[in-house]
Image (cartoon, rainbow, N blue to C red; front, side, top):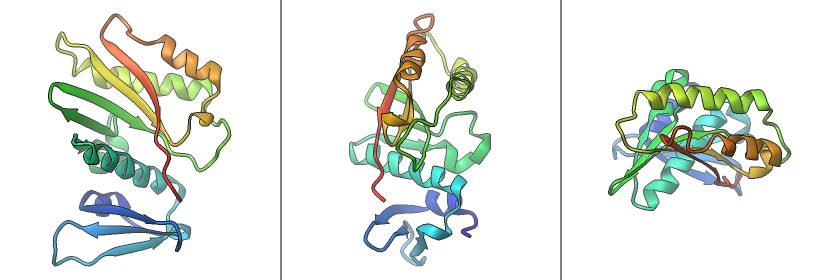
Length: 171
């Protein structure tokens, strides 16, 4: 199994080789070697880090500045994996990866995500509406009634705007 994939991901660029079922991490420093990990060697929890990096890179390609809290702090990220910013816009992102294509989010998981986000965002609030996005590979992971439940918490006290976003990761 791969050890310390989060720290390796934080120091390089992610490339997914679907044909050979390998996750490649290209170092940002030229004198470091490239890391290639077969899918089978990446444990279940580490796929979350791979997905966070993938999502962050997508936003970097769109010109956003990206701060990778999840890769830097691991489980101590306070419920926020990525912060993106561009011009006067900022969004706080929680990424949730699953290789499943059927619903796997229950109400309790949605409430936990909202609770953790609330705890984190309450420290960020400075009289300006915040954006919190829950990003998943496909919205099929969340039943429609739970999507509605999540979004029903939108604009809570006019402080936070919630969004659900799907960013598929090819494997």
